[in-house]
Length: 198
Length: 142
Image (tube, rainbow over all chains, first blue to last red; front, top):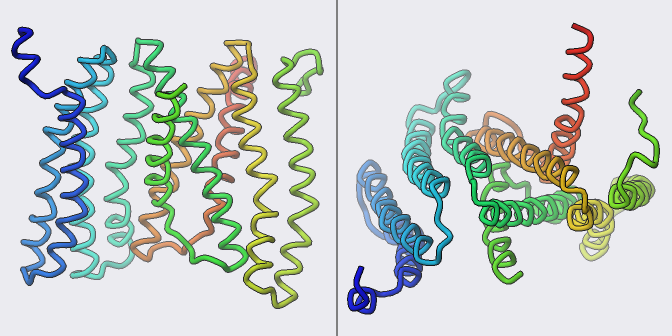
């Protein structure tokens, strides 16, 4: 890339931020918009998948931004590719499981299979995080990821302990176990910010 | 021989064990009367919040102590082993939480209190910490 080209192109970080914002708005906006529109359930499910396509440019922009700031590695590329895979499979598996649950009302082994189906891509996501830490050869990046993950774990354990006792003393409703993963992911974001500042 | 001498521990490990012991003792003293009081009396909302905070504080202290230990530990080998154990326990806990969570969401299993998540994490950590000991014994026995 020439100097003129790099001056014309917006910084990769800004592009990554823009695509991330578009993805978040799409993921929350689409269900909200579909709530007010009368469409067949199958079409609604397909429409819900559309904002997921924004993940592709988002990951590409994030890779470009990482390359520009010199914190890019092959392990990170593998991790991002796996993230794309599990995200798409997760949404499809979740929508399929909800559809089967609402239409067939499964019982017995089928109910177990339907319930376990959406958790499989998340298990792959958990594995891919472990695989990233194993594959990462850059000690600085590995240490950064480890620190963020530790913060995320600490935040998850603290939130779960505190919420659990609020639940025991009947102050808040029960929460489903899968909430652990979004709480951990939010903690990972907070951990990233802390790791950046330190 | 399972028991290790005090001199086998690093200063950071000794401090962590001391902190954890006191906090577990506080937890064992605080929790039973709170649960008993909640079960046998009509408790107001405000008092319930204070009771929940009081019950969770020793456990929050234990998790903070883990963080402090990792920051204080200067022995790179011990630090790496602990980090690895933490990562494995976190992955195992989140895996269990996600499978159980979807079983709950689809009405296959009952809802459980969130404090089971740290409980599973602690058990998973202990199990992965003990694993090398048992594998070593198995190899010696074979």
